[in-house]
Length: 268
Image 1 (cartoon, rainbow, N blue to C red):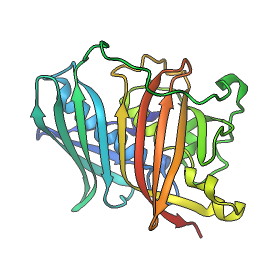
Image 2: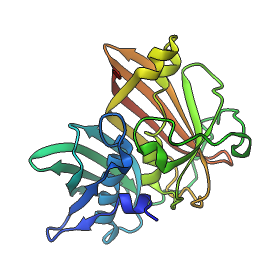
Image 3: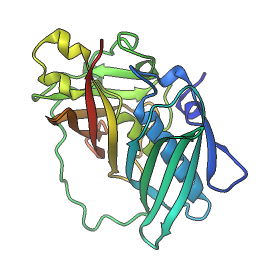
Image 4: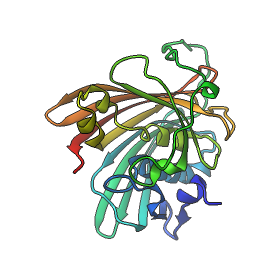
């Protein structure tokens, strides 16, 4: 059975740091491939590139800019290790299709840094546990990307919030790439601010830039574990929507936070 590992498979080319992948319609949404999938591909390429010389490194920050929409078919990813520091390393990746730049990323990586200064700086929303939340019909939405998930409906506990318990279907090991994917796979939280239900359903966003902060180098989850993903609408100014995200484990550990800026549009 095809899973997310197949969808993000990379072929290493002869030139070091250059990879090829194939975009299929399995992750298509309203106007093209899901941005979370592109982010995961860029991150996978960076991780593969740094794994041999620095296996102890884990992604800590991922920032992706989405420059243009790709078509189905092959894409190429070029990775560079910009600075190989003792504690903090910086890498960049660019995805192209033909002569077009599709997206580009900056990735910050670090080895384990210890827990001496750990603080409980976020509080998980008081939502029902996964077993008490109904599984949503994956086909009752636009595009095929939602069909890659098992998603449970979560009742919002505050205005301008969308949330869901999520895991990939079929399940795969949950790592940084999967967490980045989760940050971009719920309906836009902006819809919670739109009073008219018909207009809310037609409201969509196209991400321009997304940053994900990975809060734990090892999420210590099994493929079957479900994560609570929360997105909150922060503001819309001049057609651009700012959205804040959190990913939590079922036992209350904060795994990732995100922020993205997206262009708002109405589906016809």
